[in-house]
Each structure stands twice: as C-alpha cells, then as structure tokens.
Length: 346
Ligand SMILES: Nc1ncnc2c1ncn2[C@@H]1O[C@H](COP(=O)(O)OP(=O)(O)O)[C@@H](O)[C@H]1O
Ligand SMILES: CC(C)(COP(=O)(O)O)[C@@H](O)C(=O)NCCC(=O)O
Image (tube, rainbow, N blue to C red; front, side):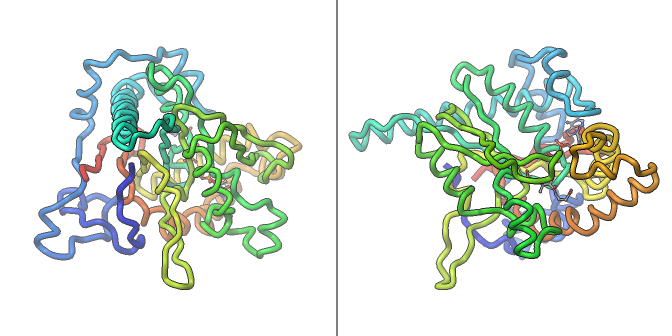
C-alpha cells in the first residue's frame, strides 16, 4: 500500500539537482550534499518511457480515443500508445501484486477476506488534464483481464453545496481544502476500500456550478476506483492535541500527480473557458450563462481573473506542495505531451 510518510507539505522529499532544474521542482533545493545525491524517484524521459510500450498490445483504436476526447481535445493515438499504455501496464502490475500480497497475507493470518478495490488517486491543478488522464486510464484498465470493473469518481461531488459555501463565506474558495466535506470524502473512500457492497458519492454539476440535490453516484465494489481531484494528496489534518487523523492517501494503492508549468496550465484554463462559452455556458440553464455573451477579449479577462484569484493561488498554496507525495508524476509540455515520468522507487 501507500507507504509515504505523512509529513507536512512544507517538508518535501529531497529532490536532486538533475530533476530540480525545471519548474516542477523549483523551490525545493536539497538540504545538504547527502540529500543531493538521493532521490526517491526514478526519472524516465519520454522516449525511454514510450519504449516500454513496444511489447504491449494497444487496446484502444482511434474511435475509442475520439470517444474519450473532451471538447476540443487533441489527445492523439500516439500519446495514448506511448504514454498511457505503459502507465496502464504499470498499474496492472501493481494491481496484480497487491492481490498476490493480500492473498499471501491472508494465508499467513489464516484469514479469508475478499479482494478489495484497488484505489488510484489522480491529483493536480484545475485544468492540468486530470479528468482526461483519469478517463483514458479508466478505459485502458478496463481492458486488462484482472480489472474489468473500473469506476471513476471526482472529488468535486464532495464540495459543500453553494448555499453552505456562502454560509461559511468561502464561495470564492471553491477547490481550496476548506471547501470540501473532508470527513464525508474520507468516509466514502474508506467504505469503498473496505469492500462495502454499495457506497454513494454526491454529484457536482459544472453546468449548475453546484451539487445536484438527490443525485448520487453509486459505487459497487469495483476492481479499481480512480479518485480524481485537486486535493487528493492533501496530508492528514493535525488535531488540536497534536495527533494526525487519516489522509485520503492512506487508502490509495497508487497515486498520480499530473504536472505542468503554471503558465501552461493557466493558458489551458483560459482556452477551456473560451470553448465552454460556446458549449456548456451557452445553455440558458448554465450558472455562467452570462459568460456566453462576452466578447473574446472580455472572456480572456474574466477567465484570467478567476485564475488569478482562485485557481492559481490554490495551485501554489495547496496542490503543488503535495506533488512529492505522489507515487508517479507525469510532466506535460505546452502541447499536453508528456515529456517525462517520475516513478517513486521507495
Ligand atoms: N492529453 C491531452 N491532450 C490534449 N488536450 C488535453 C489533454 N489533457 C487535457 N487536455 C485539455 O486540457 C484542458 C484541461 O483538461 P481537463 O482534463 O478538463 O483538466 P482537469 O480535469 O485537470 O480540470 C481541457 O480543455 C482538455 O481538453
Ligand atoms: C470544481 C473545481 C473546484 C474542481 O474540483 P475537483 O473535481 O478537482 O475536486 C474547479 O473546477 C472549480 O470550479 N474551481 C473554482 C473556480 C473556477 O470556476 O474555475
């Protein structure tokens, strides 16, 4: 299982100079020479990573990829084959080994507990591509014989409803840790992990910009649960008596942080906002319907303002500091292509 120490996000694992030179690791210089020579991550450049795919049969065709695309996505078959296919194989290795370890432990203890869902957390900024990554992985993992049932849940369903956010005076903090019903989220994940037959998650609508009353996502003991959200790698909260509670990642079997330079993510956020203006926002029922009438220039200003006030600060203050807790970090370039992968060795 996930054996990362639950240190505070201000004490990241030491990262050597060879991977601290680019933006993702800037700001966390090694503390001393000994730390400088050690990294818990093995780093693979794109071509080395892609080479791992050579012996694996590609389970998706271009039609499958087209179905997976979000509005205006440029996800290519090459990207799927070279990046996501090896990732799905790696996950498959972890799934099968977790099952073996569980069976051996049961034998040792003389117990006969059944297999429980393998949980994968997918973290990263708003607009970095978490849901695209999670959807591709869901489709790919479904095609491995050991994991036909893969559920995908996003943590936005655990945001407090707008009425509650207003009551707390945090309507402009959507996505910040305090905007989530953390206890409910922890309960959800622990119930799934413990193999409960039916666990429900609330549902968030981007169109309504709110939780949908009466709607729920029912999870019935899947082989794999992918939990995607900004804050899935947040450390446990420290209680008043100094002890730490549980973190979501205590229930994860694997975690992925989708990473990119802030300037690129901001650009993707603004571009997605511009597309939504003619898509989701054009619906008269949409919370942001008034945005569909903005000129291009006004829309860029509006999206940039939301980024600068909410999503940018949340990335810097809460999300990015959790990156070093991930089992695997995918670094994306300006065109969304993954240029390197960091995999935790320990
Ligand atoms: N691999 C990819 N290739 C091309 N475009 C992508 C890729 N991943 C994400 N995008 C685009 O980037 C934007 C943000 O992606 P999305 O998955 O919605 O992010 P998040 O779930 O992190 O908010 C979307 O417009 C999406 O179409
Ligand atoms: C709903 C979100 C908080 C994302 O939540 P997540 O699924 O990662 O838990 C985010 O997309 C959002 O709406 N942020 C608020 C600022 C904005 O409108 O972009």
